[in-house]
Length: 281
Image 1 (cartoon, rainbow, N blue to C red):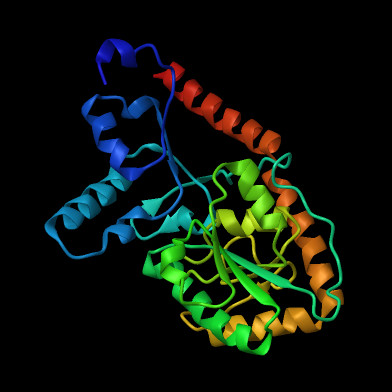
Image 2: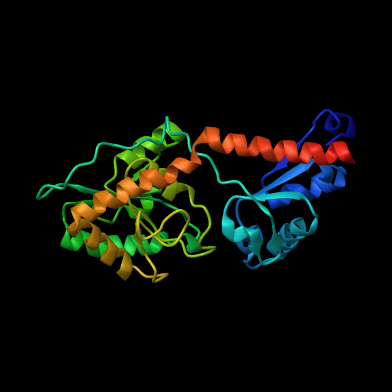
């Protein structure tokens, strides 16, 4: 970034660890808000020199003494990451709004959904394994995988891939579901966008312990890297329609704190805090 151009900005927002090094080289750390959305060094823990270098650079970002804001409570003190400020991501409720709920009649088609991810820690393979067993017992069940490659599932029964690109289409995808499943198993307690978006759309959520899921608003998977508990929670939800609806309504209440306006106001407060610090120096 050229110094003349950089001087025209009052505040810079960095939202990925690998963007902080060029900011440091441009001597702009003092006016940067570092918005941390995950502990990114862990995502480079694969073989190869390139990934080891990226992991090292990513770790360095947490020692640059930036004005750091994290998107969930666990990251306040997570390994090399330390922060005193939290800003949850916002949700646009004009796009992610609840569907009309219904009790499942006999032989009703049951639509289960997930966001298909290739990374092993996202747990998609456990969802596939669980659905293969669910499908045998509930032939009226379907699994809809957002952003999945249909060629990967051409030999499976009742598994369909959809491409809901853009927030409008993504909201419609969630509202088409009866259940949303998340089976990720790293950095538990972190904010998880699909869980929040599905909750906002009034969908029953079966998930590992990602924020803001809890016993009151979702069906928690506590045995990690296991398809068995996915099946158990699905059957518990299916068998208890009253509790299912109670959890959905609690989830709709719990996600209200992520309203765009409220989150935007808090972001503005952090911007003003940094600007005040700059004015004093």
